[in-house]
Amino acid sequence: MSPAARTTYVLVDGENLDATLGNSILGRRPRSEERPRWERLLQFARERWDQDATGLFFLAANTELPMAFVQALLAIGYRPIALSGAAGQKVVDIAIQRTLEELRSREADVLLVSNDGDFVDQVEDLLDGRRVGIVGFTEFRNRDFVELAEDGLEMFDLEYDVQAFNERLPRVRIIPIEEFDPVQFL
Image (cartoon, rainbow, N blue to C red; front, side, top):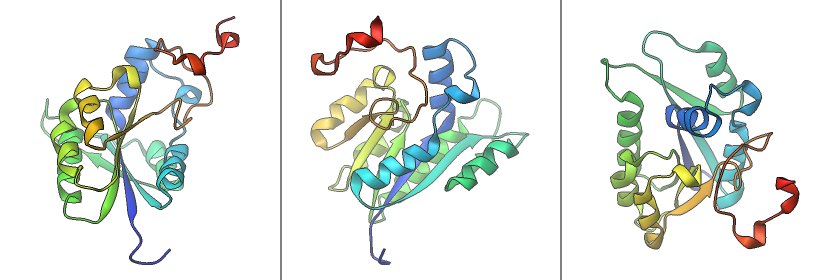
């Protein structure tokens, strides 16, 4: 790949995805085999837009660094960004907002992996001709992102589009009739 080639920055809001998966979909703490295969997300980004992808995985560490998880992220090609801050401070959101703002000055495309509406303004600012996408769970995605689709925001489902899970999740969603397979329900 030439030095002038474009990059897709994949920004992962680990807290938001883990909370949605655990609280809203499973109703409990996810087991290891139920968590996303994060390497598939990077591969999806590379293949979708046919360019290199750099993964930035944001996590709140505060007093303890989850070393096993950090090492796993490093092994599959992510740059873990462990953050700390004052009690009640949304350090992951702040860091992702700052990163999205910085990306405006770079020739790069962006995939934000979150359902969180705290990033809508920064995502909207990036819709200046570059490719920008949001990845998450469709039924939990902040509705303000849907309005940005007409401005070019692409939307992807972490399970159905990215295929980041080894097991089917117990989700209730609206199924387009062309995708309906009764075998899944029998």
